[in-house]
Every structure is written in C-alpha cells, then in structure tokens.
Amino acid sequence: MVSKEMVLKARARKEFGSKNAAKTRLAGRIPAIVYGHGQKPEAIVLDEHDFAEGIHHGHRLFDVEVDGKREKLLVKDVQFDYLGRKIIHADLIRVDLSERVKVQVRLVFKGTPVGAQEGGLLEEHLDRMEIECAVTDIPESIDVSVKGLKVGDSLHARDVQLPQGVKLITGPNALLIACHLPAAPVVEEAAAAVEEPIAPEVITERKPKEGEEETEEEKK
Image (cartoon, rainbow, N blue to C red; front, side, top):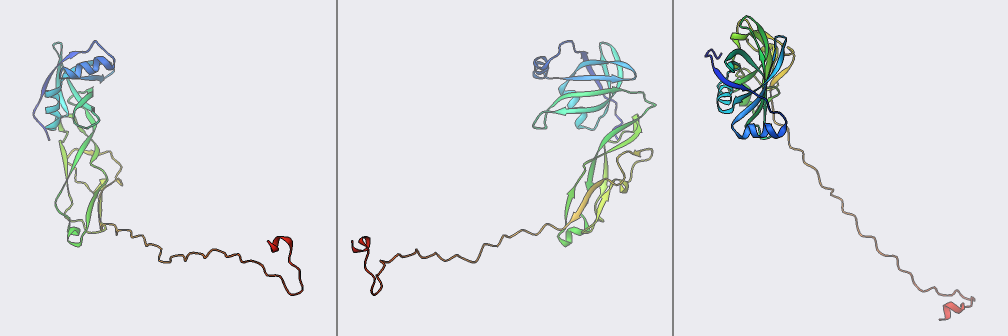
C-alpha cells in the first residue's frame, strides 16, 4: 500500500485538438481530464515527469493543485503510446477520503510452482483484478503465491487472499494463472508413397489385316 501523499502541480488546459495535444507532450506535459462528484469535467495539463514517477511508484491517489485550488484525485485510466512506454493522456476522478472506490490492481505472482519439477509451465491469464476499497487503502499491488501449484492446477480470483477491508469485484471464477505441461510438438508426416510416372502411350502404325486393302492414308 502506498501511504505517502504526493502533490502535483497542474494548470487548466485551454487549447484543444490533436495538434495542441502533441505540442503539450513535446513540452513535457500530459493532457488530462478531471471529472466526478457531479461537477463539470475539467481539462488540465500535468507535468509528465512527476506524474509518471508517481504512477511508477504505485501512486493512484494524488493531491492535484490547479490555479491554487487543491483536490484529491484518483487515477481512473492512463493511456500510453503505441510502444507502451510514455503516458499520453490520463483520466482522473474527484474523490473524498471517506469514499470507497473500485480500482484495477496489479497482480504479482511469486514463487516457483511444485509442478515445475514435473516439467510444468505457468501460463498467466490475468495480470490485474478489480477491487473495491477505501480511497486511502488502495494497494500498490497484490501478491499471489504460486508455490503450491501442481501440473493441472490453476488459481482463480476467488483464491486470492485480499487485504482487510478490500472487496473483490472481478468475477470469482476468473482464471488468473494455470500450471500445465508444454504442448507436444506437432510433426507432420511426409507422404511416403511416391507416385510412379505414367508411361506415355505409344501409338504404332496399324497393320492391315489379311485380305483387307490398305487405305490411301495407310499407303503413304
């Protein structure tokens, strides 16, 4: 859980459109939208370095100051570039410290499964789960032990030990990870039978039968 409070400086965004957004990013800033609590959505601009650092260290709740006004904002969605490296846009929602919120939390699978000794491999199906908790208790990530998994075993959302006060929102039967043997390679058998070449038909000259006269064509 990330308990350290982080303050971000921001400013209102007055220029819109893809060209202006591109200029904003080139200047080292991130376009963002703030909404929630029945208020009108507000377009702002965040410092790219500070916001990215906060996200990298697990912060989801920020104190954002815009033109001298400070609000508690929760990161609802972050968009990355096509390489998945740089943040290009963010959606933030206004929250109260007494609220409970629904958020996506990263799963960290730990340990080596028992099935690995039998040649088993782990296959991840989900790397995040949606939970509900108090705004002040949002975990940075949730650890999931896979040590007890044998070949053929799997873990579902219902199997994860959640921190106190945290409620599971993801479907309990959602498959998170499974241990199985690697698939056997498929070998395509080449056709063994080789067709013998068909001998060309030989047309021989027709011989006249006894007592039969040759035609003019056959005399040639």
